[in-house]
Image 1 (tube, rainbow, N blue to C red):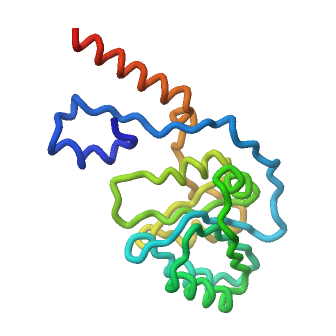
Image 2: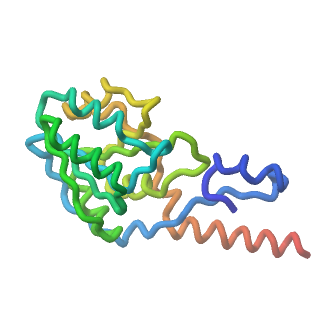
Length: 200
């Protein structure tokens, strides 16, 4: 079993496709209470995770934020920050007209609750990857619009629209029901039963 369809090319050279099932990660969707969302007086967006040189590098985005001449707040929840990205954030904090706020890491449940308070969330796509970050599922659990991009796919117009409350450029198609731990567990149990029948 693999968690995402786009991981299949990593396995099909070694195993027939008929022997592989796509079963996503499971999450307890009822375990995290969410606060009621209240719009902010200045657009507030958030990112949670970490950055990687040449893979998930946000320099292009901080450069863009320098061109935004209206107030905003960008909340960053970074679980590990090396010197290069720490310097990048410090420089951006000094140059942008909005606020960039660096927060301490939080446990997952508290983090999702904090993300649910933002107007929208940003995700930096890996430039090359055969995986889908579980972060996108956590973002979806927070039930806020998600803008996902990298330096090649970033749409400045769509982002400026989001700052005005227009989320037409948000990620679509994440059905949380597919990731419900009860659904995922049932699929694994069905796979076990299928194997037992095949063995007979």
